[in-house]
Amino acid sequence: MTNTALHHNLRELVHRFIDRVINARDLDDAMVELVAEDFVELNPLPGQGPGREGLAYVLRMMFTGFPDLHWTIHDTLVEDDRVMAFSTWTGTHQGEFMGIPATGRNATVEAWTIDRYRDGIFVESRIIMDVAGLLGQLGVLPAPDGE
Image 1 (cartoon, rainbow, N blue to C red):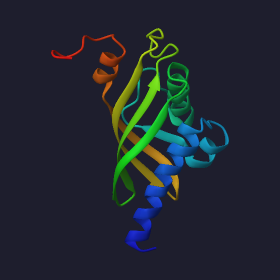
Image 2 (image 1 turned 180 degrees about the horizontal axis):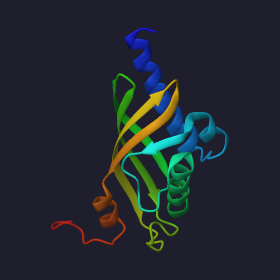
Image 3 (image 1 turned 120 degrees about the vertical axis):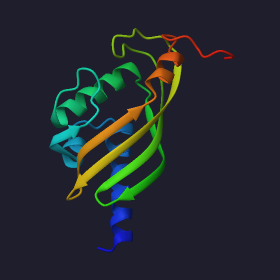
């Protein structure tokens, strides 16, 4: 496979995960097909356990808190077996999320991920999310001056 074809394939895998697992809420068939059982999150959220099940736990928590959650990839960079993506996710806070009761507020959150793939399977990720921005949008933290 040429370098260009490999990069295209990795980008396609990232989009497939976002579309099928997150946006389509398929934590069964698509999750098993696309994510390694021994998946590793290098920057886990509180309460996130190991493996594919740990990732499913976090996604269920997000779907509970934001039932209309939608993830959009804006840009990707590929190097070797890794894809870095800049994304946003949007949703309405309609259920408890990380101990925060539903606020009914809309949120748009920026996230950077560095994902690693092995033989077409998602094996490792590091997510850096604008948690302070999310908490401000939910009214948990005060808004910056001037807003």
